[in-house]
Every structure is written in C-alpha cells, then in structure tokens.
Image (cartoon, rainbow, N blue to C red):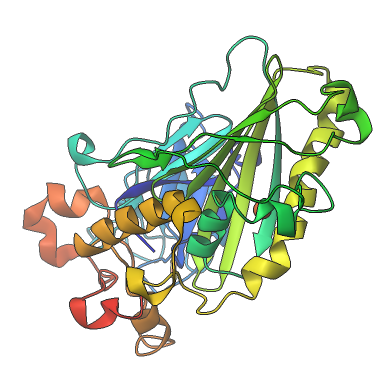
Length: 376
Ligand code: FES
Ligand SMILES: [Fe+2]
C-alpha cells in the first residue's frame, strides 16, 4: 500500500456534518463537513488523549468532539478545548492530530494520504469526460476479500475476458489479443485493443445489433484506479474504479460509470447492475489468487505479450515502492498489532519541523529492502 497519493475514500453524497469513519491504507480517518462553509475535513481518527475514535463523536461549531472526554479538534487537527482542564490551563502543544488535504472530484471525496507539500504531490487521477454534456453518471460499490493490487490488475487485464466473462461480454471463440502498445508515464498507463464481443443482451441490445468491432481501452492511474473505456462507435461508456486499500486482505471499490446513451434516470439501475455483474464474475478468481499480494519481483510470475499493460502497472508500482512510499502493513499487522498505533504522516509534519517532537502518534513504518521480497 502506497502513501503520498490522493485516494478516493467515499462518495461525496455520503459525507455530512456528522463525522464518518473511513479506513484507507489500514488507517482510520474521521471525515466530515465543517459547519460554516461545508469544507471537507479529514483527520486521523485516533484521539491523542486515550486513543478514542473521534468519528464516533459529533461536531460543535466548526470542531469535532471526541466522545470519550470531549476534547475538540479544529480543521487543522489542533485541539481547541479540553473540557476537564480548568480555564487557566493552556492546551498542550502536543494536543493535535494529523489533518489530511481533502477535495471533491467526480462525486467522490479525495484525501491526500501523505506528507508531501502541494507542489510535489502526484495529481488527482484525471477523469476528463466526467461532467461533460451528454454523459450520465451512476455510482456503486463492491467489496473484495483481496489485496487492492490484484483488484487493480484484474481491472486492466484484457486476456481474461473470454474466460471469466464468458457469460456476459467475453467471446471464447476469439481469445487472442492483437499486439498493442502501452502508453505510459509516471501517473499511469493505457492500452487500446479491438475486440469482437458477443451482442449485448437486455436493454443494451439496441446499441449494437451487428457483430462490429468494439474498441476497448483499459488504463491504470496510480495508485489504485482501473479505468475501462468501451467505444461502440457512436456510443461509449467508461467505468472508473477507485479500488480503496482497506487492509492487506480487503478492498472496497467505489465506482463511477458514465455513458453517453440512455441518459435518462430510467437506465441507471441497469447500468449499475452491469458493472456489479462483471465484478461478481471476477470475484472468485481474484479472491483465490496466490500470493494475495502482487509480487514485487517481476520474475515471480510468468508474463506473455498480452500482459503488457499489467506489467507496466507492476513496474510503476515497484518504482514508487523503491522511493520508500510503501507502508509496511505486514510489520504493523504483526509486531505492532495491539501495542502501538501508527498514522501516515500528514503535510504539517514536514511543514513545521520545529514541531517534529510534538506528534503523539508515530509514523507508519515504510517497507525497507529486506521486506520488498514479499511485496507491500
Ligand atoms: S480519548 Fe478523546 S478525549 Fe479522551
Ligand atoms: Fe474482469
């Protein structure tokens, strides 16, 4: 699991003034909207007093109140009130929690899980078609008992379609994948192939009545987005999956699907169900892959030409692990479990070096060379 990236953590519509607990990269966040301006606030959920869960509390004015002893924290994570203290007692310098930058795009809440200054942060994964006239969006979610890296790779894997999706859009009669080029940069990679899927069933049968070729463009966007663009000529649909790493064994996928046909609300349920059906078809395969984590070493599994996009994802992921951005979840789950709570460092830790010793919660350990052999 990689820090220093923007993660979609929740649907915008699901975040209100009432704090909500979300988990990403094995870390808990308290997510809520500030009363005065509806601004999104994302704080570490661990109260530095006694490790209480702040998100179980409530908001008062623009602050969030920890439900255990009522400490209040503002949008920057600074404690502004300790009710048990006599009024003349100053609030200790160490009384603050990590606050993470949060933004809204494409109907999703994005949180920057890291400590890089704004200018050095990788971009929020782009979705240029979203919100353009003529497109209709639907949202949905799906939970996998699998590591997010396997889920991402499955989402961009082209050659499994005739086998895993034989009952829907796969064509077992034509399993070969024509050679394709991968266009990639430091933020992701994309491919474009022509396929000959069977004619669609149900409502979508009106879109394509003859076996004409379909252009399929899968992409990955670091660190965890799988995007699938299906172009039928005039009609086009794009699925944008944010595969949220909850922990080493759990991934919550929140997806946005847009389409430029059947743009009325009447077709929303059908569109959403098509995405969910595909995920259900993939589920057994992805959850049974071993090892659970995508290997760090490229030679650990065998690649053929049609795997070029997946290989490109593995290489880029390795590059960021080599930068020291990989959270050592294994160490946290074993040596630290139950004894020491850690957090992903927020930008304030770097911006205020004079406060270096004023953080109560230690930083999550990162993967060292010794641990790379077993991935992240
Ligand atoms: S644990 Fe949060 S106020 Fe005491
Ligand atoms: Fe699939």
